Image (tube, rainbow, N blue to C red):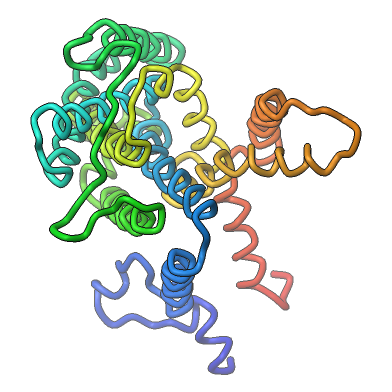
Length: 352
């Protein structure tokens, strides 16, 4: 085998230590792909315009939130439709701490995650006895209850008007008050969330999550504390989601109840289904797909002369068609499609 093919194929890479064999990216080609992605992301932040950066920020924030939901749904098998509510808890916590108390963003961000983790742990208690559709209804109740508090806990949330005047994050003289500056903050948050989740599922807790997803009774038999790890999954998921909510609040500079309703929860569930349940990269692909879908539809609508198309109606229809299509044609989502493409070129030009 030539050196070029050996470099490209996994069978041409030989590890001499356990650390090298257990690395997140064990092959040179995988490390090269990561380097290219990092370079492209940094170059995009330096060269893109304000509109493109605004879209990228929305995709990045959604990717962090989708990663949090995938920890719970994809890796632990606990279906939740309360994602919008947990995003709201994180957003309102950070907004309240920074606007009413004067806490810096760098303190409010982890505080938002911790408060959301506590709320997620409380609402995760029903998962100890409920599964499937019954758990969905329990998390739906959490969505409704938290939305009620957002509207009626006026001294804290501002009621239906929400909280205005949220300050932009600042680190000394560096203020993230432009789309370009906020892009690099969002990029750092996405990188931390990806690294954290990728390493989580290489740990004892992550393997316990997967065992519970595959068969909780069998996991209990072999010694997994199902009670402990189900609650832990809800809390870890909610922490990441709460951080995403805080990022969204300080990007939009306003929080209000309509930004965290049930439709948002369904949208995030669609992200992890389309991107790929139980994969870290799938969360990123799903977030990009859902956030870019309205933009693509608006472009199509403008290109059809003489026909007035409602983009919102098109978005809802395309969203439903996309979920049904992936569930039928590729249940494991975009991540599996990308894996198949890589496998094809890994074997090319051979058929087997």
